[in-house]
Length: 439
Image 1: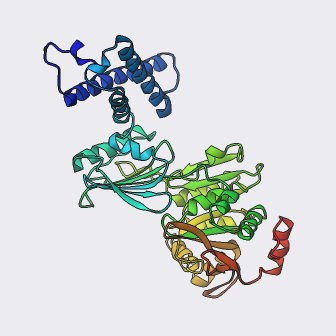
Image 2 (image 1 turned 90 degrees about the vertical axis):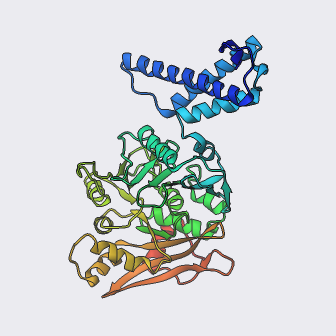
Image 3 (image 1 turned 30 degrees about the horizontal axis):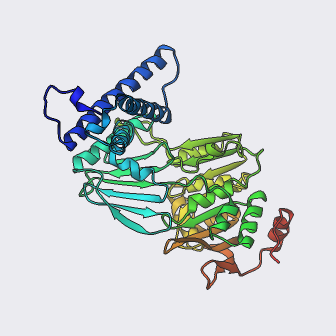
């Protein structure tokens, strides 16, 4: 932008001064246009614009300013077109996005972003590699302000982020999950995990090496046969991606209710596959300590919403008990994920979670409940950037403090899994009805 038209001095500014002035002027024009747009919508009694609409409007404003510079032939005096475009994107990111963090969010090859104060940022790529990039803030205070802007901008009900509320958990417009801490950590910390909603079928996961054709066929049949499935694995192993793929095997006419602490499954993105659905999300207490809705609360609510299947995004507490009750009382075909290091370790962890519900049930009763509620446990691992299903276990029964189960797919020497023990005869007959053959 030709700054000689906007200053009263004869000496041309330096390049950095020209860039700063361009950013200032574009920022003003974008903010004015956005404010006017919101006033127009409000006066016409229309709903508030979403972030995608506002970004589109901001880009039109920047493009119009660029065309004006081209028409007047003055842009070349200080800045190139490339510098103008970079300044425009910087303005949009600063006004509507998350500043210098925005380019990382828009990089499709990045799966996770780890930020600690003003230190260099670590990012994890889709192929499992990790690289270090430039800091996205210049101070701890700037990072805290950026996080607060996200809490204000991207959620329906603004969440506080301060010394009294040192934890923030929310979802960005693209479905990414943002978690931040302050005061309890040496520096404010920001972690963003990005979800690939475009990967949504078992066939796509097979193509990516997560499983072989036999395991894919087994899982598809198990879902269609309304078997209750627990998906176990470590952080970042792909549990949610696998759950989403299993969810999309559910027949279209069935009603699904999902329960999550942050919307990650993205069931609304597959409305053509699941037209009858409800998505529930837990809620923290307000500053007065009221209004909390826990995952256990949501699980009980879901059972009153006439679901064919209840899907719990991640079980890690007292919600385990109502979920197991739902699975054992007619809501067959329900599924969940949980953190565990193998299929066998799922059972003691579930028992521990049930104890958090203060039911007072003895261990053998809890095991009896698990033995009747859970049909299959699937373990998925992340090893050197490669995600694979490594084990599938069928629950047979319970015997006092023991869960009786068979590992029907076990780890193979090639990194995936291979057939092991045969299915229970009644299970084999059932799955064959839904297209699976273990031959």
